[in-house]
Length: 234
View (cartoon, rainbow, N blue to C red):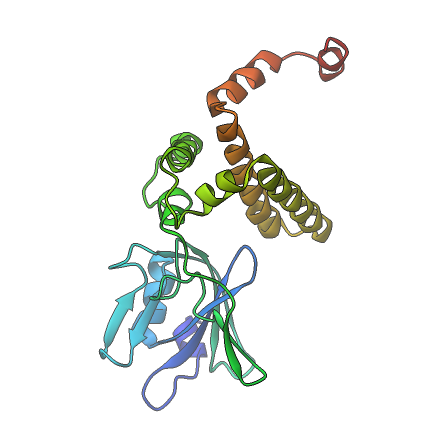
């Protein structure tokens, strides 16, 4: 049976779609889909929706480049709502926030819980079409550029500005997150947290002007050498 035959669309032919981050379960956005949008999701595993304002189909990232790769699809007990888990490239919200739910109402006040994504994260972590074999080098290259130019709105520049202790603190925090993710034994969480750790390790390397190639060279040196022998020879 096809998914569109299972789902209960409303009188306008639409169904609400909750979009969640596949790696950390963060709720990213709420949209609507019609039958054609659902069929397109299944066809190319991308985020397809129906705009109630523009009265047409739209594909997430068709203009911004902030694409979604659909990983899992769920529907509720009444089959009148969808939940899709995606690999989000860049910002899910048109305001350039990672999630559309970046504001909290608390005791009569509206609190913005997170800032918009810095421009560098668009370049570094979510660059569309980047050669996977070169991604580490490209990330390191942009980190070193931030170190040299120190733009005011740069997260990386703020780490360098606060010094080595701040960078090392971030690494220790990310190590703890990796440990917690591993304890949960959920692979998607482990991937997400290890990626954060690797990013901050690259910042540490850039602080000391150590290129990633030196790490590759060291791994090559250790290749086919007994780990016990290598440790005893230090």
